[in-house]
Amino acid sequence: EAGVAQSPRYKIIEKRQSVAFWCNPISGHATLYWYQQILGQGPKLLIQFQNNGVVDDSQLPKDRFSAERLKGVDSTLKIQPAKLEDSAVYLCASSLNFDVNTEAFFGQGTRLTVV
Amino acid sequence: EDKVVQSPLSLVVHEGDTVTLNCSYEVTNFRSLLWYKQEKKAPTFLFMLTSSGIEKKSGRLSSILDKKELFSILNITATQTGDSAIYLCAGSGSARQLTFGSGTQLTVLP
Image (cartoon, rainbow over all chains, first blue to last red):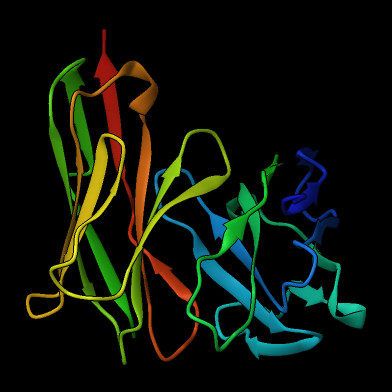
């Protein structure tokens, strides 16, 4: 079974530039998460989708971050414009279903450096 | 707001030692407690605990949940250098999402 795929693996941009990350969850997984992990901290949820609907985006800085999951499969997370404090690893995860109590599987992540 | 606290923040041991990692949680309408191992970027799943007092075991790793005290521990016996990683604990509740602790950085020296 293929895992969660993310790209790119690494990205370096200057502040005020824009960047986009892509995620393809495990086939058949209805729930998709984007987490931000700053060095030395645990992952923090940015947004949670169930199919193509947003379940929770309360911690997403909506003035600069946006995410979509068209057709309920792939997802993209965008930052525009980036700030220095956005430097982090962005992790995508998926799980079978919102209402089923199962584990989430994580992708390899994208390490973003904003200079 | 859900909260998960892990201790210690870091731990350095020698190969062959036994370690215990701690996780306390405050999760609304608790469903499960999960442990992950993070070596580079991707956290990999270790255990999911839903019932109190039932030990989950996989090789040298084991974990148990105490729902009365809102606490879980992860034990690793006969540690190896390959066990060096960040161990993350996460709680899942009515929000249907994982709230993570800050992790324990384990370093196993040869």
